[in-house]
Length: 267
Image (cartoon, rainbow, N blue to C red; front, side, top):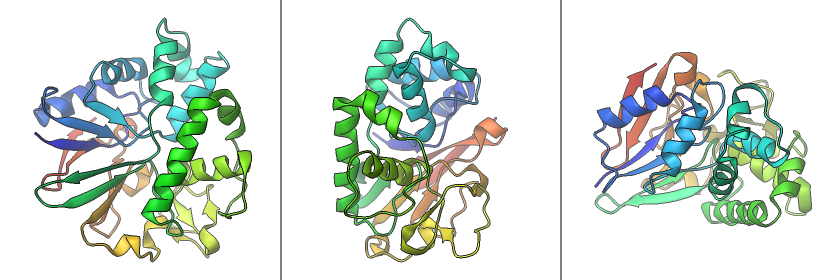
């Protein structure tokens, strides 16, 4: 039995199938955790969703493109490469499956005692892992209870920094932005959401270059997708980027948590 974490599929169904074959995925005993952004940009998003929904051993954290799809389904407005999903006969089942996916998954390897913290974009250094889990769970509960309200209110770049006094839509928006859109952070963990490159603007640096007590635990690995331009390079073995740009004709990459081996297929 093995657990694999796979980077952003973005509708690249054929490559996803080739990667599962390459890792010799056994749906009866192995587990797959995706880093989010199953959909959009690529050609076969509906096929990706249908395949994952049919396999109880495959799950995912929510990415920003997955949340965008949920929003479009909630307002019944299909557009672009997501139009086919919004208008699919099983769009209700897709919505119900996707809306219950978490923002954060923690898993461990019982042989090595290594812990893996999986999100789409990452976790800001101002939150302990326990705090991050509580906030992720809070948003998940709101998405379940008040999906229409949250999906309509989550858009925007403000507030840019976390504050314990935040409530309501502003609180949920920044939590979602940290978990699904974060790349660079400035002072006070201020989000720089405009920069999608690998070069930080003045006063900012990659979120995983900050110091945090939870970051320093040697048996913990933070696994994320989202930042394709990094091509998986973080300069720190405890921060593992898995978006290697498949949809941009790069690679689709899996991490086997048993031994930290990365396995990829080309576009």
